[in-house]
Image 1 (cartoon, rainbow, N blue to C red):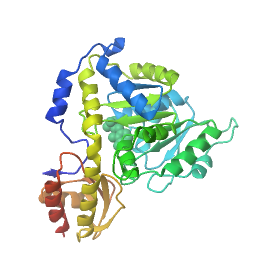
Image 2 (image 1 turned 90 degrees about the horizontal axis):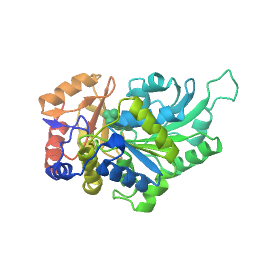
Image 3 (image 1 turned 90 degrees about the vertical axis):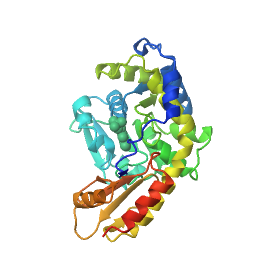
Length: 345
Ligand SMILES: *Cc1c(COP(=O)(O)O)cnc(C)c1O
């Protein structure tokens, strides 16, 4: 099976397993795991934030950040396509008692004016608007990438309204590489990006190929609170050096490879455009391809048909199907998939 269901399906490489094996460890609840401390410091430094905290998942890093920013009864502004709204089990309501104000952006990206128009009046009839969240790349927006200009306008508007801005940057790696001509940007570019946000969640278990791991970034006092919330959610961990070493290895060795996934997604999109079974393909910018199936068929029907040809993909709506390229799908595998998919009726 050629498996395009997700970029989380990758297995750790033997070099990554070796790095995990060799990692020094200690009890992280005592802040004594040197590998975890090193990863946290490196991430904070990369994005120009004061501090960072390692967590088991991106859902936890997002939920912790939201929990630190908001009080029960508050409202969070985000796009209707966002992961925090669609795929975190209603966590914002459940963990933080907050409601959400949904924007209808362009494949998950919205303007500062659109966001600011949704701020509630400072009047006790209304919930208090206390956070804006963006996602980059937008998973449900077919891996769409924000323009730096748009992010910077949003960041300035949020500052002017004293509203914190959180980034769900599960795939910010792909966004950064795409924005910089499909190469890894320099240190100044990462910092300029990091400065736009009050808090950031990043994931190592997607395109970067680590088995587990996310990091939340912010100011020192913010991360101190995040630490408390992680504990309350049951996310305190012990000898995690092996896990954080996998993430460190991914930064060094997997980040430069992401542009390959982007090239492969373009090849895949071209093949899908040639298939009679596909009505349209959303614009591809990174490693996610979303298609609309043709002939009035359902997404499930298409997924079953593709499976008969040895291709696994994912129903992403009644008539939408998602394909994701990743490190375990090499160029020759992609080419084979393309020829099978183009022939689908
Ligand atoms: C995967 C993902 C997350 C985090 O998911 P976990 O499975 O909890 O690690 C958050 N946001 C986006 C956009 C994602 O794609």
